[in-house]
Length: 290
Ligand code: SAM
Image (tube, rainbow, N blue to C red):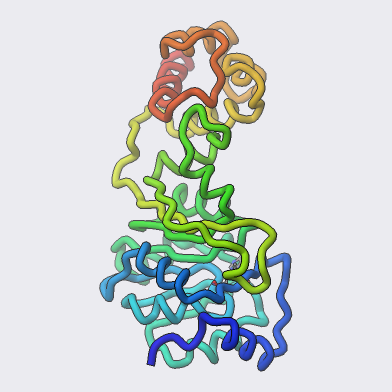
């Protein structure tokens, strides 16, 4: 049989059949391009052995593709009005389970452990853009057993996740993502691949989770406090940004000393530091705090 959705005609038919109206507050932009769908499925590298979690299935377009390729799909959708539509479009697939809930309120770690026996899952989604960062950081920070996250996000956000030191879009998100995973932008996707068209460009990014973070630190929480404080006041030097943040329980002199141990000048800014350098700074500060 194969997927029945993925083109404009069939999408419009389903939407009309159920008299569906798009809700802006849920970030609803449905995919209507089969080439993009194929690309996402290929990038996610799904086999029959895999359990896939899809966040926000919409009318079930990508869910059909995922059901064809994987062993099992769990799809979490918040919108009441989409639940009967999903029952219709996914009714023929025995390996799909729809959960009607807010993904941010769900214990995904518990779900993955229960449904896949602790084996890492793969996450695939065309994400609602208003909650991209909380979803992705939530997955990493709550230690969901997972191999990869392959998602459609706003192009600008994909660029930030993949950015490095010295680049304009390098920041706390780049470092947070790269602490947990190796990012790879798979494709840029223009607005006309969606219905309705988003106002921004989109991109598919694959985040392949590291088994171990690329840097080891004594205090992970402190590392992320330093990273956030460093980029909160972008125009300030690192020493001033950290000293004024109220986040680091050290004097300005101690902070300046720590930065000196990196071999950086006094005027250095956070955006010049690599993840390794932030880790070194975090360990230095940790030793001073104790
Ligand atoms: N996967 C579909 C597609 O590609 O055509 C829809 C993608 S659309 C960009 C985002 C989907 O996420 C919508 O179906 C929306 O209702 C759903 N959504 C929004 N916020 C959500 C939340 N907090 N929890 C679960 N689903 C959510």
